[in-house]
Length: 127
Length: 127
DNA sequence: ATATGTGCAAACTGTTTGCACACGA
DNA sequence: TCGTGTGCAAACAGTTTGCACATAT
Image (cartoon, rainbow over all chains, first blue to last red; front, side, top):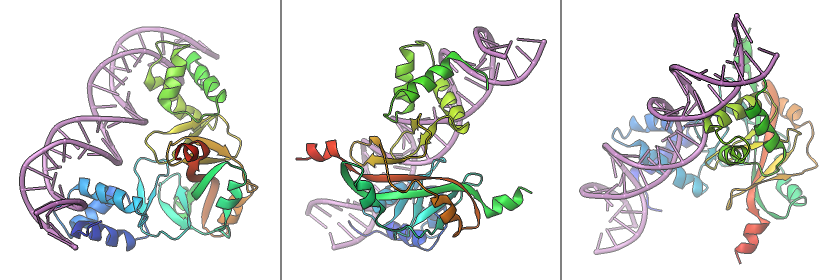
């Protein structure tokens, strides 16, 4: 994997936010720094980076994919109303993969745990 | 929600399989019974049924959505090679939502737990 | 009677890709 | 130099939607 201005800018931007952005949010941000970068390049690099394990790709069921620069194991909460994603802790960041493997013939490498509901902001807007 | 031949056929087909099929697999199956049904109708009904909680929509990160007629709480395994989805048990079909809520301001309604790895079939093909 | 559902085809959206050129090691 | 990356625009795939007609209650 060669280095490129574009790839490094994308990675930096993604690691500097905790907002789990989409490709075109990232595109807008990178253009502030590299105005003629193309959306295709953003997608290409997001794919390469996530295949290499440098970032996470999150598919939560609403339209676009989201990306996360934090690769430490952690879980996510998805608001069903505003579709925003937040990090969420549990005491259960443990060997659940090994436990599941006892119930399954095959090789389990990782898991994703997504909680769905309504976030605090949307709950208060509701009233 | 009115009844319709189409919607009922879709629901029956989905409940009769454990293969977590995609919309166009279902489309092919329903056409055996209702040859002139349209793919749009299949999508429309899958959306309505999943919004009403009669079926589950699964977004696992590979192309199309998958659907599940089994709405009892259970987890899934996704093979990274063949992209097939299987049911998987853990001892942890518990109150993890309430536990997560202790770490989060907001209302948690449910969660999805997806395990990723390589299934047995793909492991043996590998050699 | 009237709201809801359907088939069809066109439209939409997020993402990927082929190409000619540019860049990094 | 040579493999990898880029910008651009066109293509693609899955899904949604507008319309006129049909069906269920």
